[in-house]
Image 1: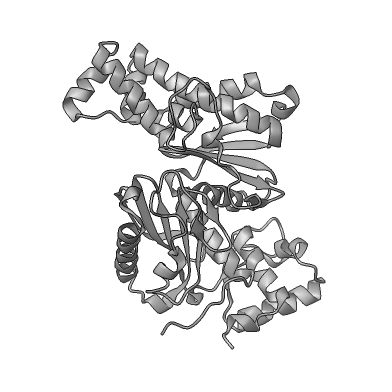
Image 2: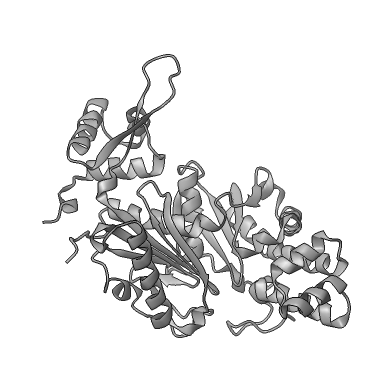
Length: 403
């Protein structure tokens, strides 16, 4: 019997509560536990003695004795996390406090297929572990995000529009070839939403995380849990139609918000403006670099270029148009916006926000807050870490000793 399987439900509950509360005091733990103070103190004392928890620093005193904080013991291991995007790969080693210890980011093309992309992912994981002077046996769990719909029970992608060749690929088994640790796979935007849920210590119960990049997706947090739907495709809002007469999307339909307002659409519209003479700044940048990016469009817009300004504004409005319908349906308290297009600048968010407030019902937006995700480009990795650690602490992934 492995060490983890000997933990009682109360002990696992204490450990998971420590994860979500970011180093709580014993008093802060009590409301999360169905235990008396005496019982809770006994469980905590046992976990401290057995090396599951360790004492952290002390909180500032409010007049009485300074309260001592608790944290997961570092000897339990580290988390290996990867955030695979359509055009980028982000890999990191995280401590059990969800802080990044080592990180590497590079460009990839996810269309190269799972064998090539995951081979590179495994190589980077080995490299980052070595930098931390750690071995595969030190890995407690692995979390991985991918830009497509995931069957969460199997960890396999299901006909992902952006990822040809990945359908039903055994990602878990691929990564387990190097590690005995359990592997958890989810849609990348679900992980970003999970990271925000961890950041706010589950105090926000119902919110949305919109990722805008090459693709467009939505992570849904309902009653303080990520909602994945019946088959794992909840939040695939990038294929909501915003123009029946629009161009054909890679999913086969026409006028999807993703093909109208995603990163490639902004670059496409900017290139057309540069070549038609509508934008001198974009034409100059195109001549220098050979290609245009959404960041180029944002810079040109902030420099006063009218065509670039209109491209950014239209993209934000189209995403806001789609999002207004989702807000009316779900009635969230907050909408966090993340992904590569957040680097365009404030005009994009302003256009998106204005459209949401104009098109949503008054009751849906009465207390609604719309803003960029505070976690920025670390959200996917942190969310992968939260997922992996949460599932282990909930007893859903058997942790085995490394061979």
